[in-house]
Structures are given as structure tokens and as C-alpha cells.
Length: 111
Length: 116
Image (tube, rainbow over all chains, first blue to last red):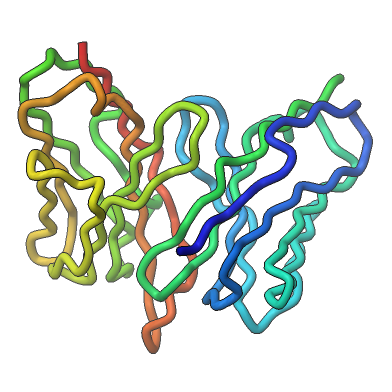
């Protein structure tokens, strides 16, 4: 059974710092991995999608990496801003029909 | 097309009442998913459709829950005889598939259900 773990559960950092969020999964047989952002009481916004054949994806200040063999992904946020404060969720596609989520990392950027 | 739409955004209902939620996916997406999220947890899979066919249902989806996607367009999720434990955010997502590979999910803003 696929399980997704995100560490840390919560993180507070001063504005301007670079930071890394971690995601691990137990079964390396995944189709893709997706990082989402969720603001309080809101739905999910897709940030980055990495197909199983890819190693990383970049969008602006965000960079996500994928190491299937070790069952790990990281989301790197450069030059953090208060607007980056949100919960970040990692999700893996276990087959072509559904994804399994971690519990998320609550990020707070201190002005 | 402005993305995945869910209606209503919020629903407060008394225990025992029936509720129905609607999801309008991105028009060219053939797959539609329902997830449930409780406070402090990640979303949990409930069910998914490919076109109008419901292909999988989670064990979380008790007999009180039913989902439909007539004509492969919008979908409805109905909860009968609601219980306080049904209180959660219900999220809908859609995706397109090519050669049986999903190309990422787009989520709606969710429907927050409170059962009192």
C-alpha cells in the first residue's frame, strides 16, 4: 500500500530565506508526482508535476526534484515571501486513475 | 473555460438530511475525481469517473454516498442521512488521459460541509 509522508509537518522561516520541503513515498512504482499549494479553507492549486521519467521541474522560484529509486521528492522555494505562506501537499499517482496525498507541510513565512 | 467549478462553496445541514454537491470539470477532461479532506489531513480518494463510467469507489464511500456523472460532463455527489462525521471539505478534480496516463490533476475550490 502506497504511503506518502511529508516532513516537516510545519515550518516557520524568515522572509527571504531559501527552504526545502520533503516528501517520501513507500512504493517507487509511480506514474507521476505533483506538488500542490492549499490556502486555508480553499481548494488545491497545482504547482509542479513531475512525470516518472523526469528528474525535476521548475517554475519561477520553485524547483521540484524526484528520485524514484529512493522514494523521495523535494520542493525547493527560493527567496521566500510572506505570500508563500500556505500548506504544501505532495501527491503521487499510483496508477493512472488516482493519487495519494501526504498530510502536507504548513509553511509560515515571517515578514 | 475557467477551471473546475464546485457548487455550493459552503453547506450547513442538520444531521439526517440529504445533501448534493455539484462539480463541473474542465470541458476537455475525461476523468473526474472526488476527494474528501478533514482538518489537518491530506485529501482522501473517494471515487473517480472516466467519461460517464464510475470505475472505482473507495471503502470510505459508504452506502449513504452516491456519485453520478451523466453523459460524462458534470458530476454530483449525494450524501444521504448525513452524520456529523461527514463534516469535511469535498474536493473535485479533473484530468485528461492519454494512453492510460493521467497528466496531472486540476482541483476545484471545494465544498465545505458542516453537519450540525
